[in-house]
Length: 338
Image (tube, rainbow, N blue to C red):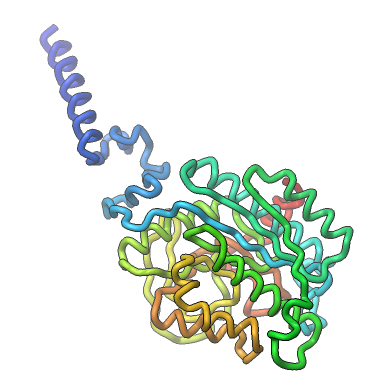
């Protein structure tokens, strides 16, 4: 009987202690059953509280200093060009519109999941299109109609950019520059604290947006500065012998890189600060086209996930395409429908 009474007393003291820890914002771990009593979660679950604290076992807690309030995802589409200025076929050798449709579906799935988890973040998907066929535009609108979050489709008027873009470019290159320029202007004028620029041939995993949000908050709180996150683990970045650093995100490792393509997430404040530099990509094509981005990466960390959160659907032999250690066929099949 005495043992039973002691057990009851211990349980009462334990509950009081847990409530006290919750009250003061202190998290505890019960290693006997691998759980967090204060969070009422198993350690295999996400312990991080978005906008408040990032928790990584066994490294502890990082208090979030830059909370994400809103995220605008700007997807640049063009279903009429297979690969810009190239005759190569993409992996699986299908028509370009199929890559665009699956990219949008994968983004919607990932963003829907993130919006369910992060009720305090305002999400919006903006599709900006150049030169897509009428039937393809109808299909894009059909896919967007099934999206749970705010969205819109914008048709870019290329005539608006003929006097701004200098040089004699192919139709595909001109429309690509104009679409990016248009996306920059949207990012500059939209009410959002985070912008995610996306090209229309990136298949996203279901956890990609969630991981990017939580990792951005964590890293910006650790670095105490803005940064850039990529969704893809580009194979070409492994062909260079250069120093890097590895960081722990929410569920993924992230490594410091010095280059990227033109799919990236960063803050609106960083875009405003370097708008004139980024604008050059919409005014003139200088190889490599991404050079203005690479210059920014010398001043602000650019991080790439390991393994990849999104796969760039290029030609199978392209070092700018398929990320290592990813089941691309499985990811492709998962996004046949919403």
